[in-house]
Amino acid sequence: MIPERFKAFLLPIALLAILEIWARAVGLQSDSLAPPSAIAVALVEAFQDGSMLTATRDTLISAFAGLSIGGAVGLAFGIALGIFHGFDRLMEVTIEAIRPIPSIALLPIALIALGFGYRMEIVIVAFACVWPILILTRAAVGGIEPRLIEVSRALRLSPVDRVRKIIIPAALPRIFLAFRLAAGIALIVAVTVEIAINPIGLGAAIMTAQQALRPDLMLAYLFWIGLIGYLLNTGLMVAQRHLFGRAALVGDSA
Amino acid sequence: MIAAVNQGANGPSPGRAQIAFSGVTLNLGGKAILENVSLDVKPGEFLCIIGASGCGKTTALRLAAGLYQPTSGTVAFDGKPMLAPRRDIAIVFQDYGKALLPWRTAAGNVSLALEASGMAASQRAARIDELLKKVGLPNHAEKYPAEMSGGMQQRLQIARCLAQEPKALLMDEPFGALDAMTRQGLQDEVLSLVRASDATVVFVTHDLEEAIYLGDRVIGLLPHPGRIGIELKIDLPRPRDQLTTRENPEFLRLRRELFDFIKASEA
Image (cartoon, rainbow over all chains, first blue to last red; front, side, top):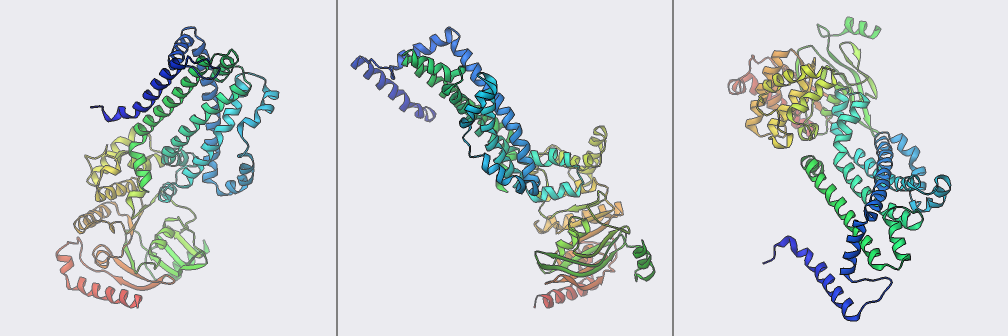
């Protein structure tokens, strides 16, 4: 009767229906919960008055700018560490000492140094994104088929060409996976910074709704953040399959 | 310079060696892989190296390619010591599946060697067509390695090596993983490609008949540590033929001699 792919939606729809019925039955009055219908209305209103789009824009700018900067740094260091074992040993202790610092713990320093706004948030997101990309890129480069490195040596490729034509393409499927993971982290950290202190974006909007005793609006933002995360990950997964279908297959069999 | 002059004066072989191993020893991880190997390969010669597994055949080839440096002794090419790989020495690896770039098409894989040599982009396409045609892959330029059979992938690797216009072609058990029919076809193709190019060939194999069929000379290595145990000159007439050459009494005699050598080396 019901197509297989829609089965996964049955449970959430049923839960929403039960929540709605329950909220109406007890005449829900709460600072933390709201019936799904009220959340939907709040969501539409927030889109209509433009506040949702502004907040979404601010959060995504910070998340993507941080992801780009952190990703570039992580990629450069990851490749260098994967290629030069001496450099890897030199940096090992330093990296392992800095990496465990929770990115959000940088907030007080970043706030003093950079003040409120995009810059502070971008720096913290970038810090959080460096590590997964650095670690996974280093592993991807270190795990490249040694025969390919010998081919590049036998052909006497220049160091730049070796990186550009052999190392990056060979490691790219795994580097892309690292970016996908980091994109999720970027969104989480951006919203966290906004909830904690930065008065912009979706995180700050949730806090404003909370303080205005508007659980419907608060939950509407929450739903929207979840949807953005889902769409981001799905989009990147589709891109990954589309870009690396063949290369990923070959790389995994090695 | 002095060493080269001395070699010229005292060397037993007439004509200058293109690849010269003199007293080459290689230790890896404290273990001697090759010990005191001296060997001259003349320009245009087809030398085959055989031996039981673990005798250092592949290592010798990598030394000749400049991918390894000897622990002691010297490896020289055209009289100059090999301190790094050279573009005019091409190496065909046994595991073609790993030596090709899976993200590039057949044409792209050949192109890599042309890009390495700095050929202008505008000239590459014609050269790629020519090379793919030469190895019998004229209609597969846009295929990826994963879409090709083992034999086709090895042809492609050979095309990439020919793109280097090598003076020496080093082949490491290139047909070891292929079925018998494909292997015989490729043996004949390699012979005709080499004859057309005048390249020196060092061909490592564990197939004794393949070594005799292809080579001007066969060297057998003894294991632990690898060293030269036998050297046979192959005077079978060329062009060689899969049926008549293999039925030649001299072929059978050589095969017997190598077989006995391998058996004794494993004992």
